Length: 123
Image 1: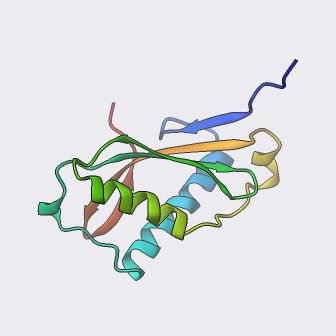
Image 2: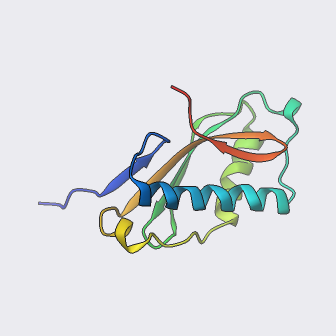
Image 3: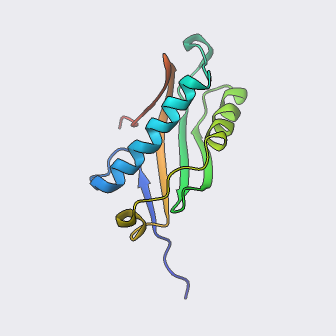
């Protein structure tokens, strides 16, 4: 019998403080590096803010990057994927998070206005 996958979906509804702190550190890294790296798309260039799922393994490596909802521009969607990979390696999970999860899927809306903002999806 295969062990059950220990995955967490961090879509903004999570109440777990250590998990939320880790997710916030990833968000801050991506937003900060988008500004420093000059990865900017003008507001008029974006048809829709893409919904992106970034799955990270406990060692901080990328498990998967999925565009859940497209921006409407294939070049932008591909740029988002490349950007996530360019910023790898992410921090390893803190011990109290790694003890419970092998993979964390961080799902956020990527808004391109004044730089990059990763926002929780409104339900």
